[in-house]
Image 1 (tube, rainbow, N blue to C red):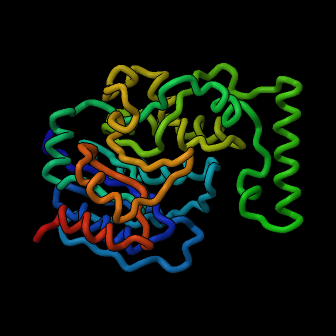
Image 2 (image 1 turned 60 degrees about the horizontal axis):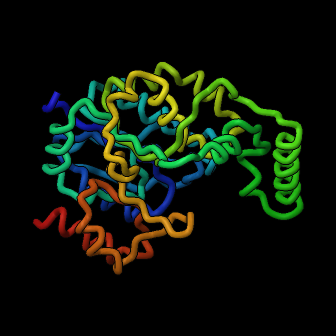
Image 3 (image 1 turned 90 degrees about the vertical axis):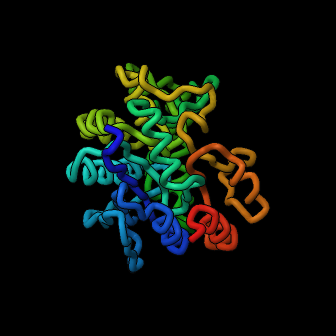
Length: 292
């Protein structure tokens, strides 16, 4: 299994200069790269690799934050890669991620931990959050944030009222499911990816009209299966998924040049999120990974 290629699965919708740098870091003969561009992207960037296989998905989902469409886009990536061949690992990234280690280091790490699933599980009790996100019906999941003006106000008010009434009358969905949540970004074995694919229809149906299911469905599938015992477990969510993600008061933050030393000192493999507003940082990270 050590000599199997790795598949990098990328969800992209903006900041394509960062995406180009990400591809430079992944351009290795031991990798294949699959990219899903949000359907809303009118003009796709011109991308190329010299060593890695590069596959741009023709089928594109109109992705909306917090909606099950995010999960649907992930499924397209898993399906495309699994149909191509068996990979040692499937790494789900966003187009604004970067590796923090070289490809030699990344492949050596996963060879040493072959068979483990790298999935972050949120620590502590998150029952209330799970109840709100996936045990209630969320109206207008693709409209309540995007639509402006009077119509947008209507969608948000109707959604809030519906959730309030469900709480008052004790109405729940998915009551018989044990849910778990954590970071969306994961590194999975071929065996678990194919297990995830067998549950596609059930997953997409279960998470209709829920909220942020992309942070829940993989953790839940893993926890309710024998793969639960194959997780990489360190007691820290970021180490369990090998992602360095910046948060401040519950908000995802962009890395800046002030974070360079902290990023380079990390022993994690990947980090997010980077931005074209801070390309100086992106260039510095890439220069460390690709010194020649």
